[in-house]
Structure formats: structure tokens, C-alpha cells
Length: 593
Image (cartoon, rainbow, N blue to C red; front, top):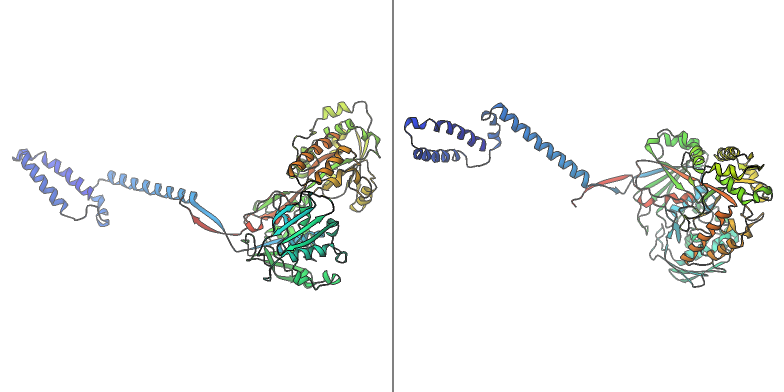
């Protein structure tokens, strides 16, 4: 209608310019103008053009005017689309949705999915960690956190630990988990007739029930890392109470367990030979923690890594429990995978034995040997940069790590100067496993570059136990599992020197002995921190070993799986630390904030 009025106005102006020639005055013209306007507006009751009127717009506009109108309308539409798309991009969220089946490949077969025995086999431990709950557990960042435990109180003398468990926790069959079940499981572990490998860890510990949700543990001596010994799964007393020790490993409950964890047993499939082919777990809707988004987990078992990696390449599985470093080249669709590099509490070092090579008793010589090595280059060349550099006896992720310790960086000039006019030869012993020999060869090359004669002694895994027990080496490239707690008493206290101990370097320092004993004997976190920091300062200065690197635990998963988080795996099963957050399905939600 506005366009119509504009057109009429234009005609009116042209007509008005010739009206004086016909005797019309301005007043008469004005009156006529008002009448014309009334006439035009009376043509339609609407002041906005209808669709039918707009389609005749081109009859009132010249082609140029009509083109401008169309361009303007197009610009308006495009702007609306752009603004709308931007709004949706900014405010549309993809949220986890319950459901979906995650399929993971595992090399090996489960035998006893039972907390009493599972610690000896990774496959059993993986399944047990999902089915059973424990008083405490390690999370995906290597921190010890409460699981069934609701609270922990430690006596002033650090010998009594009062643990209160969460109330209302249910077993997968609907029963209620109580302190009786905790005490029952503890007693089974300590009973020598059950032959549990956990028994030695709990030697000298007693337990008693205080009430339905409280249990007290008593230690003969203070031991600060004690809570990490309470990470074993809890068994239901009403199911296991009537099973004799001799029948425990044969019970059907070892393959069809009843626990209280985030997933519960659903079914299993065996092949014609009787070996397990698939093992299905289903989400526990009554779980006391966050209910998992995944509905089902299907574990597929394989004879070896070649077979498992083929299944991963063929998209038959979504993840593989572990990818050995040497098998990385076998992955085909790397772009569709996420390789989670989880830090393991293991430190590979070169341990010196001056009893076999007197020259190694010289601290300046050991410093020169450390300065001759480019750790970062070894990690890059041998392990493609996936391993983490180590500079001391604790991982940098450990809460007691001291970043101010002495670090020996690559300085071949200083090493050469320190070794000037010295004739030195070393036998470096290495176990023929994985990429150990490749790493040892790099070390040999670096040492020979500064004038040291090096012989490599490559041994089998079967030989290793005797050689380590007898300390039959001059220098040994070897990895030690240091655990999640900073207590490394077993590796560096002088009492651990000898065939039965793990002090491989025969290191003896009274100041270190004192610090290690005192640090494990107090529950005061600040006191422990101060003592472990001092310990690290002393041992990196004495340098009884060259700390090299920490291997990673490579865990490949398809990118379609979301929600994984974590950086540390104290045990392989700890890769499931955030499993309640994993999801395969999503839902859309538009927010307006």
C-alpha cells in the first residue's frame, strides 16, 4: 500500500505542475489533494499490503527499483539465517544420553573375577573393578579417593583407622551391603586357606565391626599408606559364607559375580572349545554413585595382540584394553582413534653396582654418566615422545614430588671433561623385552661418545630374577613400579639391600633411612611432604641410579566414545576411573542464557 501511495504521489506532483494553466488555485488543489488521499485510503481497510497486492509490485516499480527491493530482501533473509545459525551454535548443547553398548577387546581370558585373586591377572582385575566396590579406590588422576567409605578417622598414634561406609548400598541382587561384608572379606584375605595374594599386604592388621556401617582396623605399627591397602573389592557374605576355601576358586560366582559396583554381570558366551568369547556387563541402576550412561559393556577376548588389533582395525571393537608400544605401527585408521597415554607409576632407571665395578663408587663419575645422556632425545627416538621424563625416584604427578631436585641435563662437554684421562668400561645389562634393547643401545652410543667403553648384556625375562637377586650386574636398565603413594621404602631403605630386597643399587644412607621411616610412620600430610621432599634432594644428589623415564599405558578408543578423562593409571583397571561419564549417545538442548 505504501508503494501504491508513493506512485500516486508522484503522478499527483506531475499533474499539479500544470494545473495553474487550467485555472486551478493552490487552495483548490489542496482541497482536491485531501479528497484524493481519502479516496486512496478508502480503497482498502488495511494499511499494510497483502500478499496479493505485493505480487503486483513490479507493475508500480521500474526494473531497477524492483531489483533493489529483491536484493534488500535477500540481504535480510541471509542475515536472519546467519544470526540464527550463530545463536544455535552458541546455545545448542549436546548432552550425554543413557544407552549404547561399548565393546572392548582384551588379550587373554578371565578365570576368577574375584577380589581375593584378581590382583594377579589384568583381565580378572579389569572386570572385578567394574563389578565390585572397595572402601577406597584410585581415580583417573592417580588420587586415592573414597568409594564405599563415607569417612575415615585416624587415631593420634596412627595405628587405628575407623572407616564408616555409605549407608544404603545395595548388592546387585538387591541385598544391603554392611560392615559385616567388609569384615568378612578382610577375614577371607587373611585366612591362609584361601591363598589370596593380598594376604601379605595385610599382615599385622586386625579388624573389628563397630556397628552396621563402621569398622575399625588396627595396625601393629604406624603405616601412613595403609588406606591404599583397602582398595580390594568387597564380597557379599551371604553368598560366599557357605563356600569352603577349597571350593572358592571353583565357584560359579567367579565368572558370574555379584557385587555392588557400577556394572553387574549379564551373560557370557563361550566358543566350541569352552573358552570365553564374550562377557557382558550391564549398568547397575541401583549404583550408589553416578549411574553410568553406557547401558552395556561387551568384553571380547583374543588370543594375542595381532588378533585384537585386527578387530580394532575392522571396527569390531570400540577400544583395546592396552596397546603395546611396538604394535602402534599396526594401527590402520589412526585418525578415528584416540590414544589415551596414561602415566604409570613406574620409573625406568640405570642402577649402579659398585661391588661389581669399583669405578662406579665415584660420585663424580656417576654424574658424568648422567650428563652424557640426552633423556629427551632417547624418549623421542625410541618411544616417539610418548613416555615421560623422570629426574627422581617419584613421578612428577605424585603429590610429594619435589620439583627443585637436582636434574642432570644433557651436557656432553662437561661429561667429557670429567672423564678426561680416565679409562672406563661398563657392562650394561638389559632385559630383552619391548623396546628395552633399543633404549640400551642409545645409552651405549651416548656413553661411547664421551669415551666410555660399553658392552651390552642382553638377558631374557627368565634370567632376570636370578641376576637381580644376586645383584649380578655392573649397571642395570630396569623399571620399578613405585605405586601411587610416595612411600618408596622398599626401594631405597638400607634394610632392603640383599637378595630379598628391592634396593637394587645397594644404596645406604642413614639420613635417607631416617626420613623414609618417619615419613611412613605419620599420617600428617604436611610432615610427610616435607620429609619426602628432603629425601628426593639427598638421593638425586648422591645419584645411586640415573632416573630416565616413565612408560605410558596406551589405551586406544574410537572417537565416537565420549566422556573419557584421566591421566594416570596406578593399575590397568584404573583406566575405568571415569567410566560413569562415558557415553555413546547424545541429546540436544537449546539454552537461552
